[in-house]
Length: 214
Image (cartoon, rainbow, N blue to C red; front, top):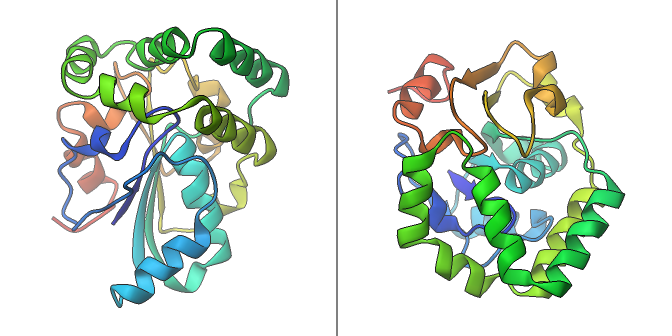
């Protein structure tokens, strides 16, 4: 399963994810579509069907790949996905990055962890510094432009292989803003913010949603 992280985070955010798959991790920040790279990985590893776990920006990337390469796409897990982002809002964030990159990213991280205080403390202690160091201003702005220019294509939700998960307290992508609200395959994780996959028992939600066979 290829794990696709969100904006301003790295693949190590998935270090506590415990699903019944072998993981494939990115070694660089994810700033946009990587369909050709995923195909290359699948060919190299001789994977007939590649499963995708996309969170936030990564969910949009996963959906794009699944729609372009349905023959080699297996299960698709979309977490905290947004239909589309306002260009005006993203341009404001870009200006904030140019003024003070570190504070802008820190404030976003804090918002992401609404309702997940212990998870936030773990992230701050172990992962935040590396994420801030690895995401330079150019990468941050590239990721924002990608989100503005690539609204989520909800036709992917017609596929039975797609499962959606969302935190009930997500302030980055409120429940009313996710296209997954229109599908019966949405699992709402009570009390979670933008990172519901860090919450205790997330794997059991995946089992009940038939994301994999335990």
